[in-house]
Length: 186
Image 1 (spheres, rainbow, N blue to C red):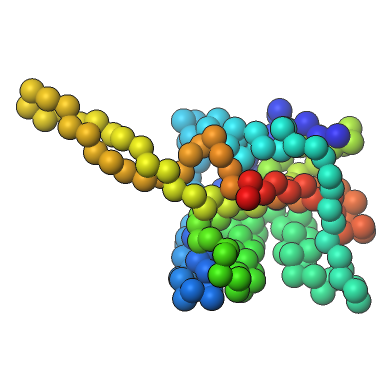
Image 2 (image 1 turned 180 degrees about the vertical axis):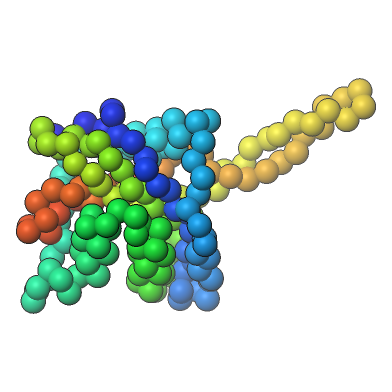
């Protein structure tokens, strides 16, 4: 059982990943995103809402020889051992996703990698790594005053009510490959 109510986002890195098979690029941000009081509650709701509405089916990292050969397990372990490395690890994670995106149906989009603290799982307070992806753009209207009328400006962005993909890697049960929750709207 998880409780995300008191979860704190310590760090947020945002990158863009394309589809390698369609020759789309990857963009890695040099610095973490600077969180502010206005964006934090919106982004927390965007990231966590799908997990509150989903049945908890846990996964774990695995490898047929040894867990240390699983790249994502290795990245997560490095971060949990030293949380200050999360931004550099976020680049490795995004690059790993890019290298795996060989199927033509995999969509490009923004990848958000977060270091989370104060999560509650099975009555244990732990840290976690959140990996989220937004793929679908939505049209929306902005309005601007021009002399004596309002002008409509059509723009595109993500819908904060619909996270496309997400993964929470809990710093819990490391020896078993960590406890992992995922959501996938598609």
